Image (cartoon, rainbow, N blue to C red; front, side, top):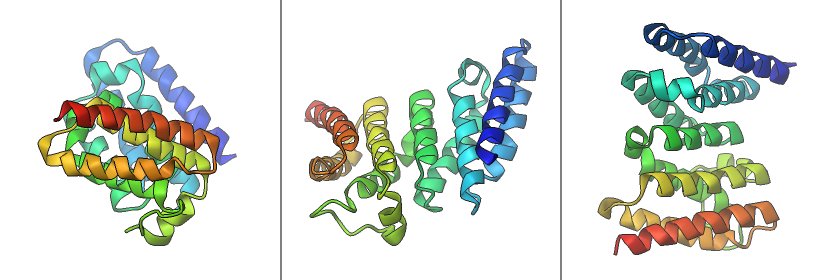
Length: 212
């Protein structure tokens, strides 16, 4: 199946990385593994784009990424992954998970996309909640947010973006908007979403307090 194929590919990638010791070869290997995955990250075939996001996340969360990923590669992955959510509307658990991994591994690079990513995640968690805002992503966000796993992933991304990247004076209004969205999302019918929202809300409020 497509899903098992992607799992095997990811496992093989990790095995290849683990067997390499030379830094230059690891840099080239990471680049070689990332490029074909990036090329299909925004594919119109959902199983392909989600498989790509899943494999990229596996690379990014590996020890080899923190040791050997070049600045150019990390910047390219951050840009492509962020644009998948913001422009390509790939609002899937795999894509949210990929960006969350980048927030944890390459926070300084992802900082440039923080405001846009917060807007996307905030819209997904409230679009189907009573009193939620009308989403700029329209039916795409509405369809995506029908799955509670996607809403959980969006809430977790908010927590990671604010927790890892922090706030700034320029983002003060954005964090305020996110807090209001999280407050509304506490009415979500799914328990796991409410739990994820509660954790993200605590992080956002703490960040806002620090900025005062």
